[in-house]
Image (cartoon, rainbow, N blue to C red; front, side):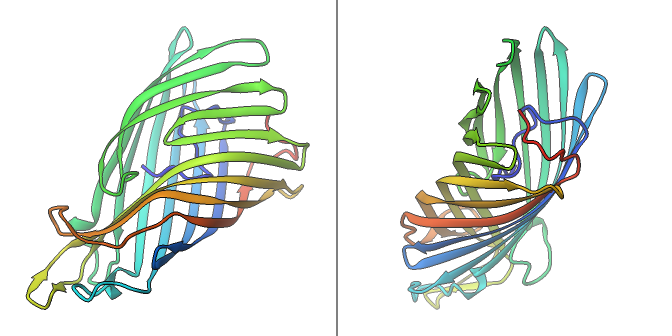
Amino acid sequence: MIITAHRNPIYCQEPQNHFEGLFEYGLIPSLGDTNLEKYVFSLNAIKNLNSGKLQLGLDYLAHTFSFYNSSAAIGTDSYDKTHTIQPEIGYYQNLGSNWAISVSLDPTLSSNFKNGPSSEDFIFNWSASFSKKWENGDFPLSLALGLGRGTFFGEPTLFPLLSLEGKIADKWKYILGFPYTEVTYIINEKHSLSSKAIMSGIYANNSETVSVNGLENLEHTKLAYSGIDLGLEYNYYMSSGFITIVRAGFSMANSLEIMDSEDNPILDLGADSSPYIVMGLKYSLNFTNKLRK
């Protein structure tokens, strides 16, 4: 499961029959002796059904690492570019009395694909949660709790899902939880400003054989990265339906390692905290020239 700044979990309050596409470019320039460039291409659609919602999505993420002081024990050239392809199918079902259940399946391929795709590139990610909504006039509140499997911690593992979503006032709304937190201020119909905390992770297979200390050859080693991005995001809503995105902040609690095929660490690449910047362009099919309230 990949949760990025553009896509919220399906239990969030999304408009009916919603479709959007997005492109983002991000740069983390100083992860110790490494910098990271990220490209995100995403399509996401939500279809309202009689008593629930169906979500279909497709993400492609390309990561380019530049290693400036890697260890002589193992070459890093085959880890400098990784690709992640993730389709998603999710379903949200109302259960009555403002209760609902949400499930999502996210089969993922993540690799450098130097020798073509293989079973080692495949990661089966998923999530499931229950949610409860309280009607409170103009300020409804919803709470979701659940469990998922994904790469937020740098390798596939279970993680908790927590989301408290609501509004403080007409122009303030929030999503508080893990792995995604956001507080948004709607300035006017054209502008909004958000404070975000986003957990992110990469786990990519290296399909090439690598040599360790010139003595041992290893196959299907992994590149594992995790971090927390804290920052501010500005959105400008254009009348054509496009939304420009600029987000900047600080990436912290970063980890970057090379592991063997059994997920044992081989090399710690010493990822330090770093500033980051993201620029993007989103298109929303049902955009009405007004921010959603």
